[in-house]
Length: 348
Image 1 (cartoon, rainbow, N blue to C red):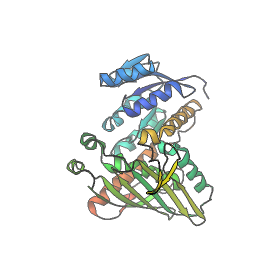
Image 2: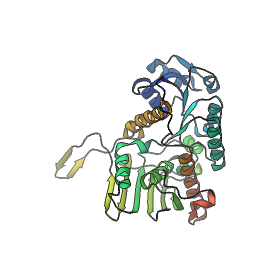
Image 3: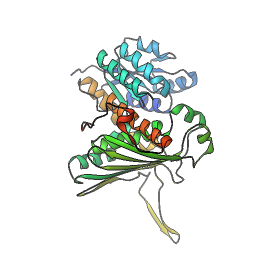
Image 4: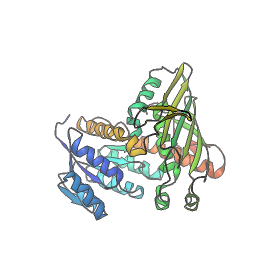
């Protein structure tokens, strides 16, 4: 174990980058925000001014050459992740990367091997694992409180669709949005997905269809432990950000419901009313972003394995690729068809 402060650079000063930068600057013992990097000067200036960051860069490669940076947080666009990870590993930096590692299973395999060869840690940003409510559901399932898991249900619906330009660069709904739910499915059941059957449509915004994607999807999963799962996604829920999970088993059920800004109930002649869900992911999952980064700092400083590693990143992408193939071919797809090395593994 080392007691030295871990010095961070955040690469990418967009929404997620600013969240991580703020947490590292003010809320995580043992961590220090040393540098920020972004190719857009306005983003960089705004983020740096609010956090009093001593160093700013426009080229991430300059950050990697800085001996006063021990670790990087990669919040750059998806299509840059793989190269930034490889360069950071070559520079000996500890690596936290927002999902996905890459859109290609083959590239992720190569990245994971290179990270292992270089002897650095890579943690993937599946922040929902660190949400206290979801974590409690996982604990109940792992403790056998619901008995043998039979059915998993996950609902994930956004309050509104992203811009068309975002859709075009995202990798599609399964690799951008549902990927969180695929990881959550593995996390909650501690079992690998063996088969995927998905249907998808464009029901929210025709521009999403023109961009080559879907905005509405239903995915059924088969697990190695025999359980079944169902995930439903929409890019637009009129009532707000809808995030629910449920695990039903032979002895009971554990569930996590939506969180709201307050818990008031108002009753009148028209009915019973309460607050809408928290607006979007930055509000709903604020605590999880803090907790995941604390876990990364703890793993590095204590020289322990990270709680969400490259294999977790790989398996979520493999499920997403299988889902897209299932929609395209209108049939169930076994995970071994897209990732032949996929085998049941309880350690998730």
